[in-house]
Length: 139
Ligand code: CMP
Image 1: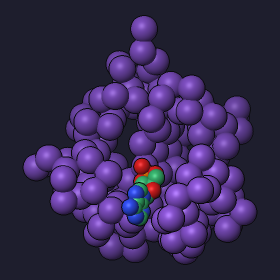
Image 2: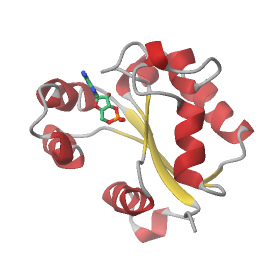
Image 3: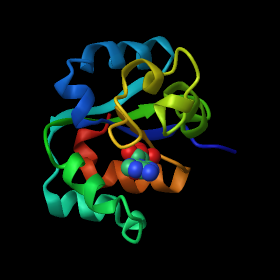
Image 4: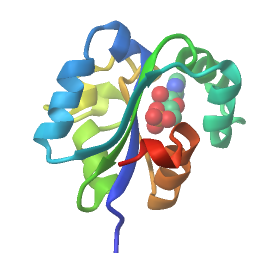
């Protein structure tokens, strides 16, 4: 059975563009419960570690620079089938390919600056939640 938890970040582009409230509103409207939430900023070392699975990819340096370039909102979300239903809500990685009404279609600038992160598996959701939050910050 699929898990009830996913992890998200509102990325530096969407924070800088003033979309925190609108994105959290879409997440709440879609029925996700917020289990943890904070405004924070990744160091370069944090971003390298968080995205180490992409370390060999040509866009890795750009990704690390971008993700550490400004504040983000990190959150743990709960819903039925959370990972998959959240990925449907945010849309395709490239906003040009994202369905109408998805968060990336509405708010992302480009494939690199794509407004939000969503975990890709139950296992990674847990790892990513624990990367950003201590046990006493998750409710
Ligand atoms: P996300 O799926 O949240 O995590 C990995 C990120 O790498 C992805 O979002 C994009 O922001 C970024 N990414 C993926 N493909 C490219 C690409 N071709 N060019 C730049 N960034 C990319």
